[in-house]
Image (tube, rainbow, N blue to C red):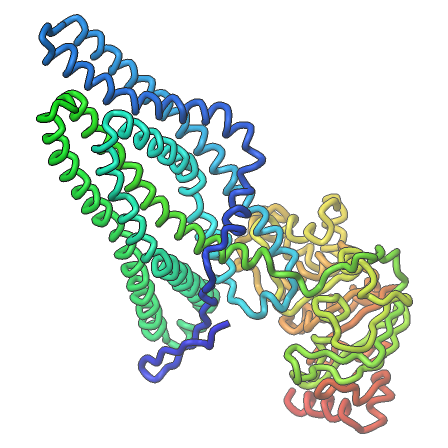
Length: 604
């Protein structure tokens, strides 16, 4: 990743992280990979759309020829024929109707197929992101990920709905016109066509700059999305500290930066149009100068010159569209590179080829000399040894950064240990399938996430096939039933994202109910009672005595009153176990734990 950029405004310093600009040659392998998404629809694409494409091209190429016949045979011949003129006019009209019908059906079906391709690509990307490990999300802001799934995928829409077929039509039309021009008059056709290599030589010089410019546009858009996401999530803090003006100035700076990148990219794109027009004008000049000479020499008729002129006009149109298509392709490649960068990201946590499903566990856990580093050279855990018997309740205490949350992250295998071993019922957790491990672990976090939907759906997230009676039973067990019943629609009350209509304590109770519904063999409470008031805490203590019975449980808590009855209390400091025992034993030791207890009572 690039180094963070900083903007200083009014004494405040904002730092943002850019995505990398992918700087490599045009990858035809990636091009084929992108268009592989159209393969499932090839049977639909080739017959009907192919037929419409051929019909449209043939009718378009036939019209100038009929026009030349009308001029040479029906109008300016020695014996003009009004009947022939009417017949040719009718034939041209029919061809235009056929061309319109063919174009309408082609556009309709290509839009359908294009949308299906975009659907498949977005679905694949989302599924892959779901499988990626925590360290992937640790390194990237949410807005940066969001822009890949939305903006970058959407930018491919035009390419799949119109670009592909237009490319084929223009290539066929271009070849057809070149053949016709050479057949009408080889000298004149060759003179006009000679300008094409000049145009392509000049245009290819711009392609690297254009591609880089569109990558930069995508990057700046990603940065804006990241900041928007952060600003919306942190709006309460922004308003509480009256930093709205600073935030607006920072956004304005990024917005202007993005606009400059867009202006630069579009200016380069627009350079193709004048380039084609100048080349086309030069070709037209050659056409009429040489054409007039050939008519004087009797090698060309007026009707054929008119047809030739029409074909040349149709000749420059597909070249112009191919130039635009190339620009569109560069934009699409910039987006596809960003998409496939994510698709090629390998999860750090994945099943081994010979991984087994973890059977129903009892809950015996052992950590053997566990070492873990979030970053190389900075150990978060330093050789942890810990034995936990099935059904025990283990409390992890210590100052911030001591390693409490790291241990539970490793138990759930959100990260893999750097060295040592973690076993559950004798199984090394790296040798079992991740899904079979996590399905037997329930986690309640301090920052409870509530999804958009009903209260009932949020609880049922712990086990999707749970019946309504089971949902209500676990809600009663954690004393959430009463407040739910007082909501406007009870369990069917709709909550918005993050559950803003609920208090922090109510959200925590829903998280308890969700975890308990999953009926895990191992239950982890990570600061789960930190945001619950004293009265609510007393209620759930009684429920937890019953609900924790028979489960192996880990409780991470700063409020030491919640862990007095734990079977074992583990005191951590800077990634090492300093003390271990129950509440009474650790009090008698007069060590770190006793000091923490005294410190809390001192400030009550």
